[in-house]
Image (cartoon, rainbow, N blue to C red; front, side, top):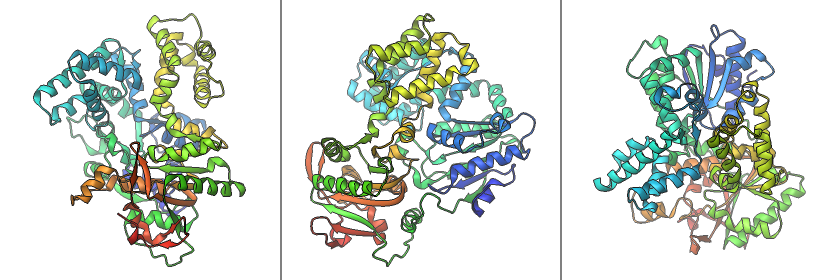
Length: 584
């Protein structure tokens, strides 16, 4: 059942028509996708045994789509596959990787192991390790694969040659051991399809319709997967009647993964390639606040929406320093709690984790319950609980079947005094238990179970979403990037200072008269604001701690875009301030 006219047009559109659907946050995108899938399946729009493939950028988005589907319908469950890009390619390689010289029992290495191996490769080819790792980060965040990136890198030919040799040495050593890293999963799938197009055809025959989510976060390699699925081999133009139709959901204003090589606002690439219809979801279901809706709309469209009601504005408090700011936030949180609002509905966000350090320390000293999402980044979890992964590695390398996977996991937790109530330990334990209910998984040898579990943890567990769903009675502290896709009743958006957000380097170029582009910063600002359901509060400090030093700063330029919806207040005097006297 659809909820508005824009959803109706998308859900009940002709199944042979491809379309790009503009879908702002909170406008019922996931709900609409789920209803579209249900409509196609329940109304006999799929022929034979063909299925719908829902493919997305993140595990969180895939999980959310699953929740919105009527999973009680067994026919629906059989006809739909919802998965992220890496997990989709992983399953392809698990079936056909031997065709390109890679064992089907390949292992995905962790971020920590990747850094260790790359250090060894740099040392082997006499590359400065610190410099080499900086290029490794650029390779990981590039829209290109490693070899293409290094070919285009503007450096001396001597250094490029050493970097290429080190990187190729790293890749080849992985492949020789039957291992790959996260980036290679998609590269190897494309290699398989390019060399053996018949295997691409298998998947094109299997899936009759594509649902593509979060296209603005898709990079070029991921888009190559989409193009091949839609039109087949890139060597042949083919008959457009044979193209697989799709719905592509996109919001270019949420493009905050440009640093990871995302296509950003270039959603027009899919329009240029396939000429789909353009549709727009036009009703906000996240917030009933007309003020928050107006702010988000103004940030999206750039056109000022009049607001002459001074009572209907978002407060932006200006503080002398971060200590003063932290004391205010804690005081305000106590007021919110007294109204009966659960702690988990309160979130404090900033563009960087560094900007959250002072409020974090204040909350620790006052024993206020909070969750710091930075602690749940994959590499930190791998490091904190590395003995679990090391034990799995040991089982895999020895082909050890002596003890069951669940018992091995329990023994590691006991021997290392891991708290069984820790959210990470509980998530891994529940993940293993769910897998053990699968008959195909149960038939595997124990070392193969360890291999599958380890690989799937890298591919399928979204720690931010797990924390959001399982943590109660704790306030969320997070960077904006880690709360994308989440929503909260009360949001404190702190750190609206120049040299912080935007960064020092961009502010410096601007101050020197160089024209700068703030497209990504504007998107990050928009994503932060749109996490709000009920109440949004902005803060800015005249003095901040940055890189271990005190900096004197001013209000940033980004908030000027919605200045007509914001009341600027000097916290000390409670006087209203004019933005012209505050901004840099």
